Length: 90
Image 1 (cartoon, rainbow, N blue to C red):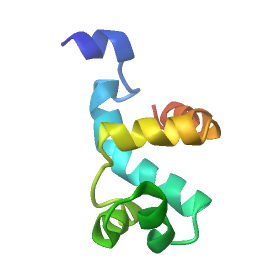
Image 2: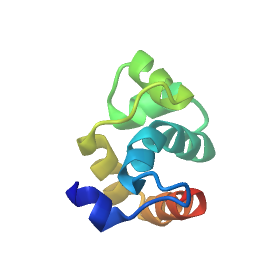
Image 3: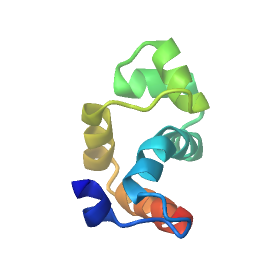
């Protein structure tokens, strides 16, 4: 697969893109928890329903691409945080 060649593999031999896909929801939850007081605030800031924000907060669901883009545009330090998360787990 193309992405395996681009992104490489983990030490266990798993394609890194698989970890990144599976690891997105928990990583996004940790970032939200480190930067906001609660899911109510997240819902207000990102313009989503409380239940959606709660699912993100708990790591039950990944955010959509437009939300992730909004995070990176609005919070420039987020990109470095996520890259650090991925490098530590790879």
